[in-house]
Image (cartoon, rainbow, N blue to C red; front, top):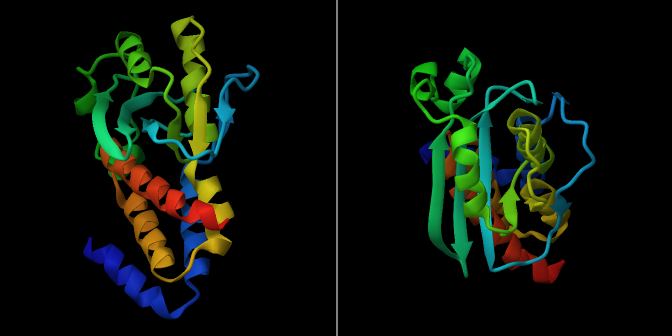
Length: 219
């Protein structure tokens, strides 16, 4: 939007790579895991290969404590050959209070989730949607900590998942990004930060991944 364009315009005269690094730091701070109640061995696989079929995904939660805090929204978009083919979007009743801070950041209030389905009612549908596709997300460690913390809540084992962490991939690509692509990256990172709705965030993940795909041959 206008705020994003203004931000990029103001910073056009400075080192755009430093701007990108700062935006990445701010995003990573948002996804930083405070603590986890899930003590199991890591069961997801991190990857950074170029794939044509993937799912962008994010959880909106009541806080950053996997196992203690709960998921209140799941957003996911399935892409095949660069085209969006399916969406998964559901509010989740966390069976606990949604903090005011979370409502301000996401727009999701207690009234929105009190009649939403619980995770017990949506997990099978979500797993069927994933169907073995690799997941593209940000803050992968935190996202996966929340996913596998569900095992304790559901009393069932969840499948191993392949995950790509966009922020880590982009950070490695920064030295190879130049000119218009750097400006595009900063714009996308700003738009990702400003996105409140889970699906809007997922769309930005797709845009960031496609930009990474363009840069990857030069790395």
